[in-house]
Length: 246
Ligand code: IPE
Ligand code: IPE
Ligand code: MG
Image (cartoon, rainbow, N blue to C red; front, top):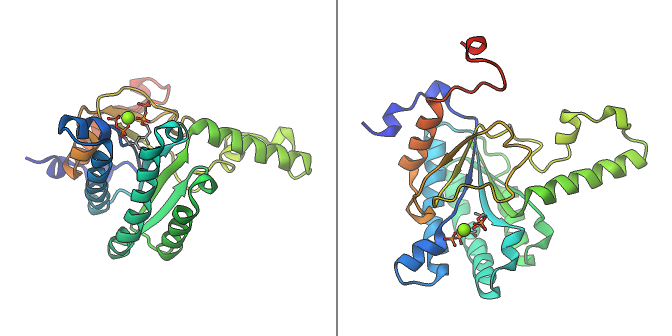
């Protein structure tokens, strides 16, 4: 029986976040340049997005480029940005057909102008789609996001719009880039690395973590379903005892 068939569709996570890792190693295994891995990673993105939409997952967030990734060799950064533009361009049609809304989080103004323009255009085109919200974390890091939120909140406090006593989790979250998204219940990382790499630190506070040794370009919807199935077997306690939950 496939994991697709095993899934309990009444117990789906509302939001799945993924760290798409292992493109470089995938390419190296095949004696190719790292960029070849990134190109093949796009196929994995397409299949994963379609799979999420197919079963009814409402939010999918993909870590596509981190703040730290800017420090990679210039050739790789340029190639990744080019790939981003061409992919967004090509995939907008598929997003429309699948009723997927494109969203992005991160320091988007640091992206090359053409990238940012393509992205904004695709987001505007897909803005009214309702089946799935696909968020790309681009030039994103959690520390950047938290600092950015703090700066905006401080500015509002100095302008007298908020008081220190008003600050609580809900208010703080309203300054985060993910303010319109529920917290991810499930975080998947591919390629066998067991770390968070500056991804959604606030939002993942109580997420279930799932690690697979599959390299990102080999990841397909059945791998997503396997991770969701694994998630569905777990007991989420949020600090309570098992008896309290049962
Ligand atoms: C993930 O794959 C893609 C990005 C970080 C952009 P990597 O490029 O990190 O591949 P590995 O981890 O070196 O194999
Ligand atoms: C995390 O992968 C960032 C993305 C997947 C975009 P990295 O490959 O950059 O992470 P580290 O350096 O192994 O922690
Ligand atoms: Mg990596």
